[in-house]
Image (cartoon, rainbow, N blue to C red):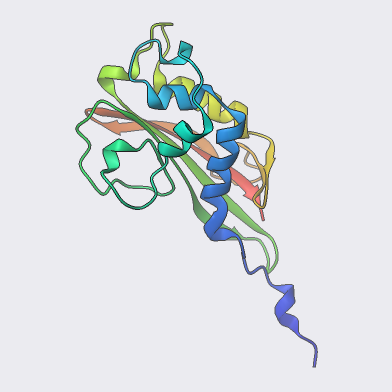
Length: 179
């Protein structure tokens, strides 16, 4: 009897997608990390962070969440009152096309406290980080995840929207990929 089990997508790396995307961002974008670490209006023009400084900004499942800037899920377990900026990256949806191919939605959210959102170069932190996320990930094949794209060809709901609840502004991207 043949083993038909191998003809089904088992999503063996699903729990590693957020980590892989953040790891890619560590190596491929300096501006995002500066905008997350420094709360000053000139954050975009500050020195680059070391790899260990970037890693220290990633939430590891314990500690005071306001000490961290990068998260691998949605939602916040604690009420944020500090003037900070955060990025959240996580797989949000699976839409199976058949038993082996699935369209997956990956959300990348940016939250910025309104008081630190405007930068000295007359742009906003959420717009600059959104621009940097697009430049870093749109059309990029990240290890184990596939080619991320902001395109209805990959995911019919792909888009970017702005939302938020005072005192935080939120902008999010929904990338699509085929896995």
